[in-house]
Figure 1 (tube, rainbow, N blue to C red):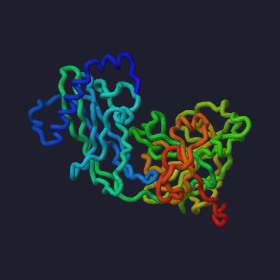
Figure 2 (cartoon, rainbow, N blue to C red):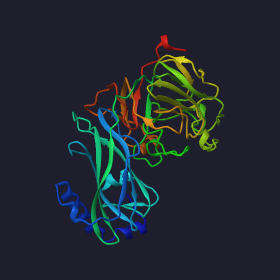
Figure 3 (tube, rainbow, N blue to C red):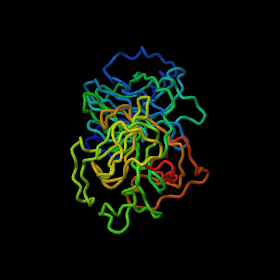
Length: 403
């Protein structure tokens, strides 16, 4: 990750400090005498929301955030963060180098280079975990974190432990597809600074991440194009007007259908935060879970609050309302009937066909054709989420379930 001149100055002669910090880390991990290090101001470590388990393209992942607040009067240079099974001590994830920089991302008061990430005094940094569990490994019941860091003011290398958290239990809901046919691109990027995964809202006195597992569904043709003819015309997009389907038998919890829509992508104004979702439908799935469909076409919402819907029933059409760069369906599951004041929850799609995918969200954004399905990967998928920027196809909407 590139650094500013100020950041490069901070990291001058830091390599030795990082080595010392990692040595301290190893000593304590191996049972070294932690009492030999005098107490000093360092980080307050907290996990604000219980770590959650999600199945993503055959890999079980632990998804959560670790907040680190620097209480020292000097910058602290983080060399490594290790998450461990609090019961047995086994390493779950080990962030250093490029992986550490990706976990922090770009944020005010934080500067990363190849050896460490510097957190300025009184700054809160957030490390975003998207940790893959080993195949067949038991999911931990609780986590603990070790942070190896160096204090640039006095060249001290230290280790701090904390951020204890119980892992959320219970399987995620298995849902039907929110759309039919395809090809649909599952647009999201866990490492992206402004992607759903890392966008928090504090609208009621508490910061939450409603889109932690959100996917923007965008339809493409076989060449990866989003539209035919003039792509600035919203009506020319392949996904525009597609029927949006109920993912489960559920009760309609909220709707909105009064947000206007621009006829062109260039004509869309940036809306206030309260209108960012555009027209939407929220379904009460039960057990404190709500499914959200956002950016719907004006006048297309076919349901009202309190209605009972059946899985596969048409509830609206894909549109271009709210904060959107092009027609797509934003879909996520959260723990409250609120578009912003809710925590995003994991879920699984009970069936789809994997066609291929994009190497990165940048490749998708350039309009390149997607890559074919990699050798060894099964096309038929069940009870999981697609990987970031995967291209999938859903079954046609069952005629018996049509509205």
